[in-house]
Length: 274
Image 1 (cartoon, helix red, strand yellow):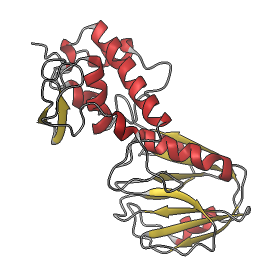
Image 2 (tube, helix red, strand yellow; image 1 turned 60 degrees about the vertical axis):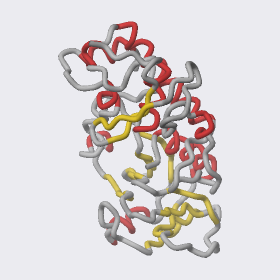
Image 3 (spheres, rainbow, N blue to C red; image 1 turned 30 degrees about the horizontal axis):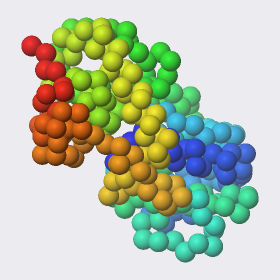
Image 4 (cartoon, rainbow, N blue to C red; image 1 turned 90 degrees about the vertical axis):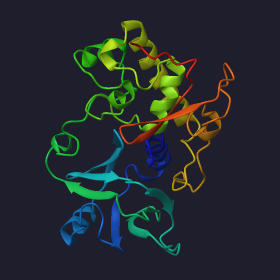
């Protein structure tokens, strides 16, 4: 699944081409997405100018003259800039043709993605209303994590992947941030010290910032908006490295199932609190 760095990379790739452009036509080849794309939704985009493109968690928001286009890439989706004459490939389901003779093309093999038009304040949409803090916001720090952890008896990995606590920290980056902070993923969150929370907040910010700079992480179903893969995969220190030596102590990396997701960690470098 595209995670926050992949979505941010897509945003930064699209913004120079689409900002200020009018959507002159919409082509929908497949309407069966997470929300069915109705004719009303299709027509709502036509003729509107894209005033800005921004991100909230893993959602892309197209600020239009009237309403907001809400986009989610689902499990395998991607957005690319092509010319309208570029032949549509299999799973190229939606085109937003712009007045500058470019086209935003939505590719989604599994169709878990979302293209939705929102009239009300988008922050109050049911998909966004309960989202937590952005991990790159100045307000995200150790004090915030410690406050949210009070009284919670869940493991730290599931805690930082809870979108109501902090958005956009998926399985890859949670494992990587916990390794850098020296915290075992099975630690109970309310047992963490303030110092550990400070280290973890810094690690999350550092990992996500580095991944954005590298263009995201190469996964089976993800490519950047220009068709090239991200390269943060070369910086991964524990994720999917089971049995390989830790880069710090040479101990084999371990794998453990937490919350139905695989977690990767070094049993020596990452402390498990009592």
